Image (cartoon, rainbow, N blue to C red; front, side, top):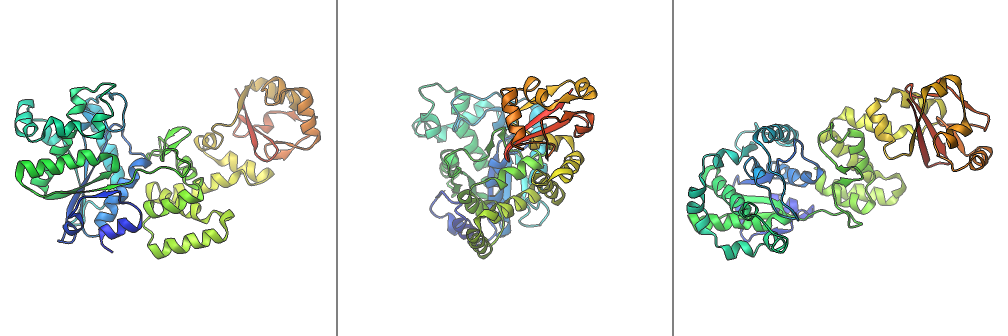
Length: 426
């Protein structure tokens, strides 16, 4: 299947410039996508564009990943209501190094004629004077043309600096430079970048009389309308020190059926027959969440590793185990994973000295933690056999001691099946 057909059935094309499909039929075509270097890691919002480059290379074409060392100092105004802070060179270099290491997990940078390449637009802008830029580039694009772009019109009332206004010219020149020096004829990107991309094709046409093309992908949203790539804690990063493999796995395993059937096409390399069969199996037994499990497995392994995937599954299953088996599993977990599992769970601290001398379960649940509103509520729940300590049912005469501490510092309280609380000894 050719590149464009591959993207079409996966639902990954939003706009395409006329002639683009023909361009990819002429042999090895070089195409690029720009990545924002404002952090030393990409997040899963960038995964759509990474997968576009993966499909491009698998189809025999040459991918270029442009990391904007220069444009990162300016800041793309697209979709923003205020100007972003500019980055210093030291921070940019650190970010570029981190992004390169992540792209290497997906793209082959050593495969010969269609080897992936990473470029930094700072390399061609660092010696480009302002006067040379406005003479050689600015004169080819009119202010009227630039003002018509949505990224500009949306900011006219709130205000926009000349720095941000000039961003589309800078990005347009990136495309021109790659067209001239790397024989790059196609720019790829998200649909919100369409205006900036066509400025590049227009610059190539006006400045050099050349032909260039564009393909954009839809901006992903969840089925409920919320933004893709965000969790309760913010961005879901590809760097495990920013988003642990457990949290990363959980993001995908908790997707809705509708989202999972969409994401499996976008974020995996499974073929159409494989995906059609997987969706069919999932619909037959939706409660088993086969689609979500396969999606989470595939992406977690490719972004992290088989070991990280297996550890995330193990951690996810611990709370479904009972008594000693669950506690043994919790004790064996690294503390950061333990804290990931119980992030957002109501917590309270009780002095370690109280555990040394022994503290009644009623005092721990009411007086020391406020997990229960009154002694009466706590006693009723205990008499109804609705309270568990460390996955074991307890009665109202239970005394908590140091022997009840998981990892020497935690007590896991559970009311019913789904309400968890965490006591931390300090």
